[in-house]
Image (cartoon, rainbow, N blue to C red; front, side, top):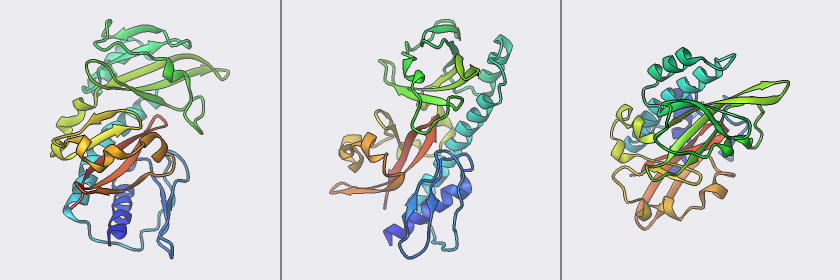
Length: 252
């Protein structure tokens, strides 16, 4: 029964979250999921339907709102044919008030112009110079950096000439700035492969997620349920700039 619920959860996410990173879902004899391409819609068989329980519906609804905001930002960055001027940067910040700021970063990772001129968090942009697995040079890039003021998610739009990187337009944000968009944020856990971004009202160390080696686990898994003596957590990943973000909530 639990596997049917997990299958239905991912099917519902695929229907409700058009910008989300999807997995191909086969409802045949083996009931197997697998990724076919990062951040691309895939053929989905939804012939088998199961009623979601309250916790599954809650995770879908919370993630749907977040996915809409992240998807809008991805599309806005992709839409730039050339790096924006100061007015274009301010316009982008008005569209996405949860952003910490924007920056232009050189091919060697050094910071150029930025809004605000002195960023609140001091970031190392060199991880943006490394492509994610299967990523193309023109694809959006991201990383998460922990700082004394909290983790910062960094998403970059590369601009190339003759396949050579010229500059990166970098948008950064603290995940906590998105919490006003979420219903019951205390029930939500969010992390990257390496960094806990938000644990809501939960003691993360007491959840089954704490025992997982996420960098390795996410290479083979995109969703599921984790259980231990303290309870169970339902989770699903959403790719941003080629890197996974994990969203989870308690299972009944």
